[in-house]
Image (cartoon, rainbow, N blue to C red):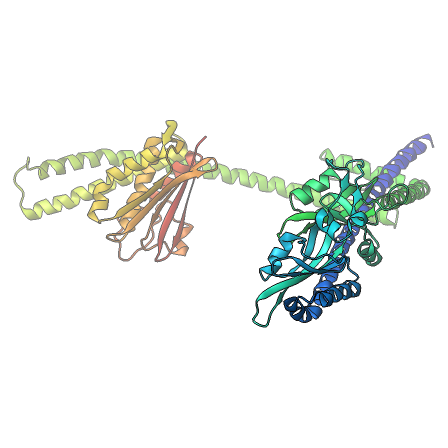
Length: 631
């Protein structure tokens, strides 16, 4: 009984761990995903609400612009006749119908003929805007209204804003903002000939005007602010005392990104006295200058509280789940312990190499099924182990046979090559003596026959040398003299030696080789490879053809490409092109080798730790690539 209690205790501890881990992971992932989704959806809503805010501002501007269009046709005659009384009436009516702050009508010199806000004439407001209008342009944008204009239109006292410094805010070197931000719509007035004779301008000043921000909030449910530079001039963000936070400043982080860099700011930001989820966008005037910002946001605290509630409920659910798992585990532990112990014991025997094992569990539940599956697995493992042992033995025997065959092949090649080299050298010597006339004078037929014999002896000697080289490289008998070698020097040396061949076919060789490109190689062996590849390129190039040679750094390798524009290699031959004794059949080109050249090239390059491959398209030529290690 004591043993059972101990095992049950272990099972209970295991159950706790098994319960806690998935619940903890699931809870953490669920909470994290939920919070992330909430944040993302909240930010998406705020971004959408910012678009709504822009739309409402633009709608207001469009309304002002449409209102101007309705009255502009009636103004031309009054401007030409300087009927100031009619112009005054038009300005007042337009101000009332548009619910704007002021309307001015001006002549072609920009001087005010009539204002909705005073009886003065002859002065000039908003020079930079009026100048554009008198040039024939229309204005429909948010603009900065200067102090002089505000005073001329009797709006200064209404729009001046005291500045309040808050936590995290930017710093300014003034205590009041005397300028204003306004929705401005203006257009030129034309006579019957299309000449500009004046203009009309309507302005809706935004400073301390809360109609638009409250309308936007009504549609979006968020708080809204319109900034002049970094100062809140119209807002429904509240101070701690519940008043509108007009005159407070934006945070430094937001100001730098939006006003200075001209980017949209989205995310968490400090607003007046608390953190908000926000979206800020630059406001541009008609000159494309950033003059302020449009802000939409919502306090972060309700989201934090909701997230805390989600976390608390998740923890509670997790705790109840663990408690329930412990109760169920305690009830079932007794029926689970015994078969598990048997399976554990059997598993230990299998792990120690005893595959003749059988677990007897008299149960029809999942544990019984597990025991049956375990017994089947043990039998399968035993059979697989026996099969693997047999297969491994067969592989070992085959490997030894292959090693012996390869050794015998290399030995035969070496013996045959050495045995052939000596008599061939002797034969060549005697043939050359006869050709030199030392054995008597030869007629033309005799000389021609001996020349053919000499060429075939040379060809056979090259074949023997290649076979010996390949055998030595494959067996590792050749020791490479590895040094840092300039790639350009090797290529130039090869091209100089092959110059007679290129001249014979009038072939142009184009080189594009990086200066100071080096590789750690055996110079003589790599030159042997380059000679073989460039000779092949010359051989397969047409008369007056072009060969391209490129060399450049490719990560830790020197990458050499030798490209010709010959017949190309058929697709079926590409995979075997580097095989020993393999030759591609070209009907119009005489074969004068044994098919060992590229095999030797491959062996030399791979012995250096490099790579070689070919890319080819039939009828368009071939490009051989070599990678040589630089380190």
